[in-house]
Length: 180
Image (tube, rainbow, N blue to C red; front, side):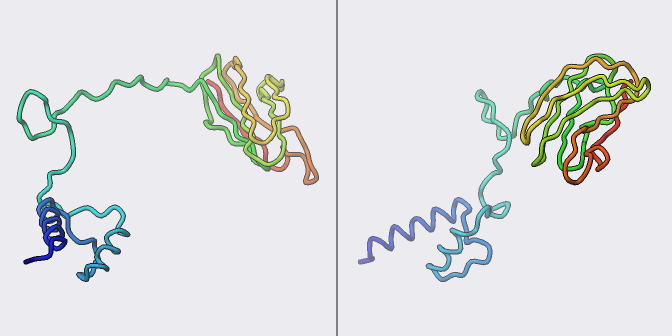
């Protein structure tokens, strides 16, 4: 009389083989090794044609069709032809603007201090030589937004602080953007 545990094991192996399961890549045929190797084989999928259909699409509820149904692509709003927001990231001795140009008119500008030291930001209208916006000191991790209205022109963004290494602007903390 066969051992009941072996019968269950044999039935499980047959069911697994029928459903497309097989040994993991590189598995040995020794039972203990196969189990250990299979448990470490993350992401292993059976080969195509191993008796299992790919899981893609959805089947309609009213028919017995086996092919995926198609749907209309989701509608998205088109990106504005000209950006109206600019992110400015500052860190130790760099100032990066998220874009180099924007539309004239209302602009949302955000200063983010990604460094380990305090920084600030001034926006200078290069064409007229006037400061059009100033951010107070931002501490590491701070993000501060301002709504500006900028006419067409060239603008210089820079940090006015200094430390033991010198004036941040002179150490590379500046960027230029074009509006219009």
